Length: 417
Image 1 (cartoon, rainbow, N blue to C red):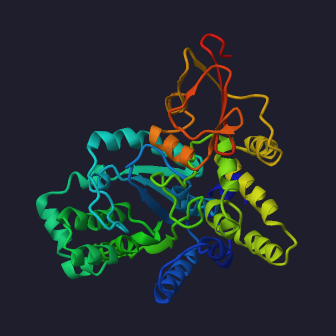
Image 2: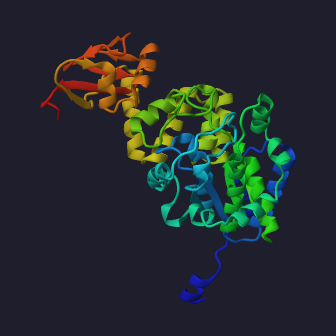
């Protein structure tokens, strides 16, 4: 075989069972029959020994992403590493309505301008996880905005109101007499139509989106396409280990946060969440996770050491290995040995100023409300002393500590390095 013949030779994929072990890891379907169906159909497509077309959609309803958003991205990355094609879909049209999945009340609609501003940062953040060179980025406004009213009526005719009211979140709202707008029903139909346009083999999503993803199979079948395989993943619990990760509740790890903050927040999760985080939020494979599980159960590995590896894995995957190593050094000196770092971020002040305003202006916390909450929890200290008033005055020379791993040194205006 010549060199040119070798270049044109078909590329064989990894063995099917090797792919299945990785691609099915961490998935959650809610019922065993659905799991068996999707597992069988995925195995059949992988046996065709060709790159599959795999997608997940992300509505740009906020400007930044947290670790919970990366679960589906990591599943896309697993497909990429086996040679499959990943499609990163930005829902700049579906985002106008907002996904009602797992919401027990109407979701406020965003403007097209807000969505466009948020969308500009999404692909950049996603490429912390995905291989940018082999990711196809699409926007569903490119086709959904072109549908006529006749097209919409035709799509709606494929579903019944009863199907939607069987969904738990809609059923609860209906029983309470809360408003359910037709636009909310349209979300699943629009997402289903995305699958038709993209002609996907596999769609990845959160377990709360199972109805929407299955609707895609309905429309694909109606359009003469082979129905996509659906892979759903559970909701990642936040740093409290109980509630879903959310910026609203403050139990989140932002993927654009500083490496020190990412590492420190991972170290704050309860031991019970360690293995789920390894499975869902790191590139560590299922065999290695099984080994960790066995070593933890046999007390051959301390939870603290397992958690440090977890924090390194997550931090390195969002930044790089050097950043993760530096973040671990920072954590061990400031948290475990309770040292104040030699190098602290500085913020210049003139006259004494309220603590909450300084922390927000310095970018240490996001809002005055967050400062109030942290102070109430005893998580803010000035010069080593916990403060009880979120508006207490601070001045040049003070060192403020927020939580366990955020510091800022206040200096006179003009003295900041």
